[in-house]
Amino acid sequence: MTTKHHIILLASCLMALAATAQEWVSGGLRYRVVVADEVAVAPWVEAGTSRYADVVIVPETVFYDGQNYRITTVADSAFYNSAVTEIQLPNSVTRIGRWAMADAFDLVSVTLPLHLEQVSCGMLAGTALTSIIIPEGVTRIDDSAFEDCNLLHTVFLPSTLTEVGDYAFDGCHSLFEIYSTASLPPVWMGDDAMPSVRGVDLVLADDRALKAWRDDELWGQTDRYSLWVSDNDVPSFELSCEPWGDHWNSVELGRNLAYRIYGEDGYMMAMTTADHYYLPVGDHEAEYVIVPTDGVNDSEEIMPVTVKAPVAPSDDLENKLHHPLIYALGGVLHIEGDNHGTWTTVYDMYGRRYYERPSVEGQIITLDRNRVYIVIVGNYVKKVFL
Image (cartoon, rainbow, N blue to C red):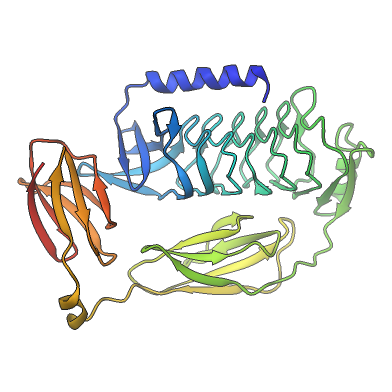
């Protein structure tokens, strides 16, 4: 990234540090209140290092201090220079901030929300992405959004895209195919959106679009782009679906260019090029439909995927399980032992709910001190003074 971009990033980080909004950590993510009932995923940095790592699945809502919050934003620099490898964002998110995932050097796949409004400045710059889908509804890809993504080889552009910012794809030396459903090409808003890119196949929906892109002064440069119409031939592959943690099933993707994923209600819940998509385990068996696509045309075959509800333990098994060890130490609530994949709920002595999420072994660090709490893990109840 250029010096100019580092200066912009530093300024945005300083602004974030100056903010005085309420923040807390829950489920491995740090949240910041945006408005009364909405929160952003915020940066979580300790000793100069981001705490975020590995696979990150952001939920649509989070419960804290007796209130449900909707997650609508990923803050500026939220995952900047972190060790995350995959990020799956919910459709409740409409804004992703500047440099939000930049320089996360191990980040190989991202599923963006369907209701995203804009790809912000430097959003995924310097990552290890190999492919990305920009969802329908996005009208602008801002400056340096994918700069120095030198492994990025496939990009899907939406029909709604009208502007591409300066150096948006600069340094993407592996980029060799772009798919677009747009009838008209987007305008470049700076000197050059991809100055170092050559030999790219532009795959379009029909002959009319092909003519419009070919006649464009920028996209019609034959030394940089070869324009084609999609051949409608999208293969289908078998998928595997395995439990991942207590509350998700991981669907192994990656054989096809991209996939559309439909929920129980028949509505599309995601479009992704990720290697995996994580489906929630609910209180009943749920069937999802996955359709291979090239972004322009879909496969004629669909692949149903069933996610089963968790099996309740029998009385015999319940009697053999050890109760979790619950205790307070140094202002932190500790829960150790086999929590059976049930839920942890924490109330104060007045019945106000302070915490609720699927139970895991670990710590709860968001509770106020000098209070008595009632902690419920599954059917086990413990009173503690923090």
